[in-house]
Length: 337
Ligand SMILES: O=C(O)CCC(=O)C(=O)O
Ligand SMILES: [Fe+2]
Image 1 (tube, rainbow, N blue to C red):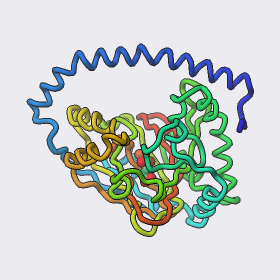
Image 2 (cartoon, helix red, strand yellow):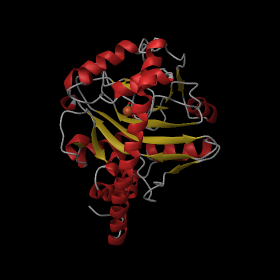
Image 3 (tube, protein in one colour):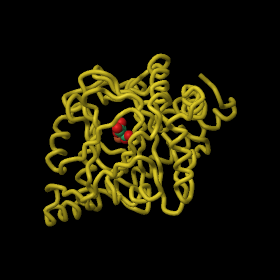
Image 4 (cartoon, rainbow, N blue to C red):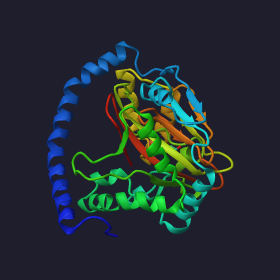
């Protein structure tokens, strides 16, 4: 479904994609050489420091608020809070009309189906193409940019004249963050990205033991979180199950060694062969998480480098609109999904 791009623009994207793929290889090779040169020293450090033991909580808690404020956003960006939970951020009726539109008219697919795999995750995507598409193939990359802005507008239309939850998020972030907030322009492809990925979870889609029960502990950015810059994720909840489906977030700021340890195991968070063993291992090292019970209309923001998991549920569906927020000190927040 071509909606935005001209044939020339699509061809240009395909050329840039090919360039990117060529350039990425030497970068990766360089990284591997660097890792092996330092691996022995790091392993020795790990043993000496007793690394690999329990990772302590950093003492941060979940801030619960009735509205978004500059101060709460600043605390979150500086990692002084573990997550920000804005209860009743969006009007539940509008959330429900967007959820019904999504469930009735959109074709939900798992990311792994799009890339020809199975049994990887519990998440379906119904509205919008996830940003992972950019690394996949020229065709996926073209589709992503082709549909980014039209998807934003489809969601707006589904709100039927009311302010859509994701538009409200964009407006309030722009108003409250000192440097504003914008839809991200992809730095490589120079095109507007998507904001508001429609995600669906349902019991039939849950894979293995972990997703059905405590959820898959994972990160979407480096666990070595910093206050100068970081990637945050925002979800507005449109429909939630009556029982279960809570979000667990871990209040950890791992040391370099612990982050290496976590990073290593988190690579296998979704891998069907290692998933259950890895999940059990991660949970023995991490402290108790904060559990956030979410309701339609709520907004939750947290640093995507903090380990997190969505708990399983026996019945119903869980529908969210998601966006990443890229934070860099003294710059506008940039939003993309
Ligand atoms: O659905 C949620 O509560 C969080 C989902 C998630 O893993 C994320 O936004 O990175
Ligand atoms: Fe995540």
